[in-house]
Image (tube, rainbow, N blue to C red):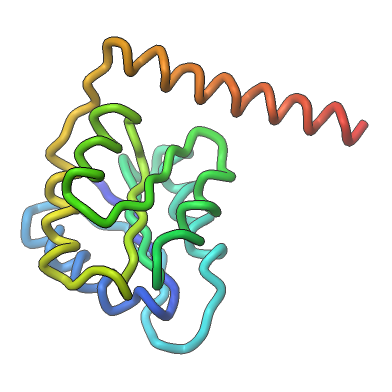
Length: 156
């Protein structure tokens, strides 16, 4: 399994701890940055990780910023991405089991490292349930394609 990681200045320390945690569990990591407290724009990192997942350079992605909100919003702009902003293990489980989330967004100002590790571990260990949830995820993806087509038509 390969995980793409990205963070802004608020999330870089937690991202680096998550990176080490994943590597200690034998998981290959693609680190898209950032690696300092110098102010950066979170959309750049969210986009890079989302493209890693959508273009299959990584199986899943994990993003960290202050709240996780901006990262999730940005990642969800990339076709095929289902990013979930999560702050509990239950939400992590449901985002995978019911929504087949392929990007996890975390808030470094909300979670400590142990909480984040628990969420990441639960998220990675939870398979998509399929069944009735498959139909719903397919509807989400259909909406994405319809909205892309409608947006393209409006531009013409």
